[in-house]
Length: 205
Length: 98
Image (cartoon, chains in turn yellow, green):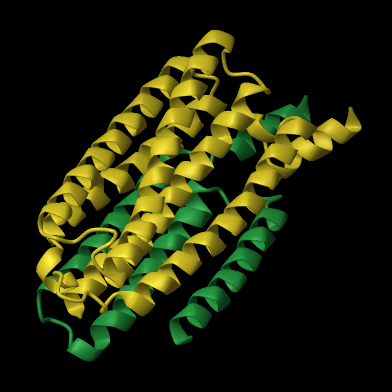
C-alpha cells in the first residue's frame, strides 16, 4: 500500500502508469521510440545524400508543391493535439470525450494519408517513381516508411477504440491507449523533419 | 486522505491549456519555416540553419508537452530518447558523409 502511494506520487494519478504492467509498457515503448529514431535517421541520411541524384527525372524544385505539404502538415499537427486531448479525457475517466477526440484524430490522420496517396500518384504521373532515380528510391523509402507508420497507427487506434468501448477505461486499456498516443506524437515528430529536410530544403536547393 | 487530496491538486496542471499553447507555438514555427522558404526576408545563407532551429524547437515542444516528458518520473524515457537521438545523429551524419 505504502509502495502504491509512493509510485503514484511520482506521476500523480495517471491511469497509464498506475500498475507495474502499465509502467513497463510505457518504459518499453520509449525504448522502441529510441530505436525508431535511429531507423528514421538512417533513411534521412540516405535521402539527404541522394536527393540531388535525380537523373533525367524531375528535381525537388520542380516536383514539390508547398501548398499541399502545408495542408498535410496542418492536418498531422492538429491530429497530434487532438490525440493529447484524448489522453486528458482518458485520465478524467471520460470515455465518451476520449473516443470523440480519438475519432477526430483518426479522421485527420486519414485525410493526411489521402493527401499523401494523391501526392505520390501525382509524382508517378510526373515520372518520379521508386525506380526512376536514386532520389526517387530514397524519397519513397523515407516518406513511404512514414506513411506506413501513419497507416499502422490508424489501424492500431481503431482497434483500441473498439476495445475501450467494450471494456471501458481501465488500468489495462489505459496504458495501451497512452502508448498509441505516444506513437502518434512520434509520427508527427518525424513529419516535422520530413517537411523541413525533404520539402522545404528541396525548395531551398 | 490528505495524500489523495494532494494528488488531486498536483494533477490539475495537466490541463488542456498547456497543450493548446504548445500547439499554437508549433503552428507558428511551422508557418515561419514555410514563410522563410517562400519569401526572401532571410538572407539565403541563414535559411537552412533557421529551418533546423525551428524543427528542433518543435520536436522539443512535442516531447516535453504532448509526450509528457516534462512530468516527474520520466528520467528513463528521456534517457532512452537521448540515447536514440545520439545514435541517430551519428548514423545520419555518417551516411551523409560516406
